[in-house]
Image (cartoon, rainbow, N blue to C red):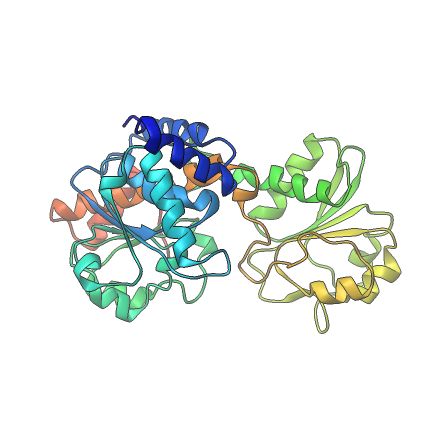
Length: 363
């Protein structure tokens, strides 16, 4: 749809720019292009998702521009207040010409959840616990808006969903034409540059045992860095690899261990002693950033990351990664929802979605 014209559009643009969206017209264009490329068609479907701030405000707008009726849940969070999320969602939807399709709500209500075909596992909607599942109708599906191996404990009650016959599927971020996961390389490069590490000609160690570490090293190497992966930081051999390094990227999303900190793989004191001059990027994985600060070790972001979480998300790069990822997740939801409307079983729905969307099975 074309954006609204006149004063309403100008008001929306000014609001969005004040709130940090540098180019709302580019955001609208990227949404349109992504919908077209994914052939996302949500007409006659109801989507229950979040109303968020920053670039994450795009999700209800993507769904609406693809034809859905949308309920967007706004709540207070560490990212912003309820009213901020509501106004950001409203202004972006107005600018993109779909405000009449979007209803912002402030609580989970069975009257709305019961109508939803697609319930996204995002921000304010989490957790999709047993009480949430009880509000959902028999036609509901849950697209888990990331890869299956990234599933976090507590986000979705899989047993409750299975008991109700509600399918839950992940999103293949490496699907042909999508390649969302490739943004992890530029994201790590940006974080290193925040620490005044030029990347080119720099020696950078990346700690990780999953997809994050491999992708980051591949990207940094192409950018001219001497980059290498370490499986962990336990033991003299791995710790000695940090000597003369400019940067240390912690990128072990899957790890259950503390990587840097007391009782972790290595302490900040040991890093300062074995690798003076190093800076640390806690991209994902448990890192005690307070101990890094105590030892005078530069690090970014200052808030750190955590188990199964990222210190910065792809939104730090711009709107495109979030638009592509969330549109892809909605495409998974579309395929599952269409299958359910055809009367297919939960098992058949998953098979259908694997054939017709970038869906992944969650074991």
